[in-house]
Length: 172
Length: 172
Image (cartoon, each protein chain N blue to C red):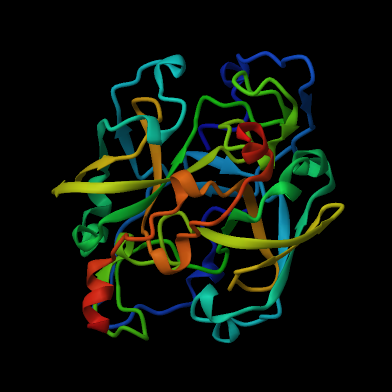
């Protein structure tokens, strides 16, 4: 365990209206970083606000020990990529995202700030060469640790008519 | 860290054609179990083969310390739920799923057996009462540890025309 309570991960101040909880003393399970994601963005403020705002091709580098696990992945048009948002604090239950300006629960947001900072992004697979995947649809920092790659099944993963009510109400 | 190398999690033998890798000596980050999922299924063989095969309403129980993080979730029709498949071994890179019968890479499969056994399931939200969510779309064991709840945004999460080539070829 190299990461448990990172003092330097708490560098983001609480905004007015935000509420922190007390996290448990210990974690319950360990995860492996299985590779890294290479993107053009070195700082948080450079990242696109969401993945649909970018058509950048990013590179997923999978560690050699998992090379064989990529067998068959090339037949997928889209993948579900899980990664670790290593710079985010983990204790906020109510957040006030800058671009919305109103308080909302962490589980109603896709913010990197959450008890387990695991992101899930759907990407379009452009190419695979060895253990490097070229994909479109990521918005994370360069060097972000990779956790998992899954085939995206439209039969279970795609719900085109899903609605996030609070978000739809903002646009209406 | 209560879980690192679980001898009892290795109870599933390798099938002919399956290949294991050597996992790193230590994990890289820790995760919190933030609640539990209650389902009708007590044994692996009782679980539906995939979530679309079941219309069972399951219950997600979120720990009290995260209660406020649910604010706003009730406005969502669908959620992306992440959970920890705690009974799965983690070292297979090539697997031969029983119902397919041919070897394929772990990252081309949705099998629970993977370096980080994190599942991602899209569920339909039926109701919330306090810290209990009633949802449809899960296929996991009763007592499965919860990792995260995210709002499902069709704009970024839904790709209806995505294809998993190896799977489509089987049906064709």
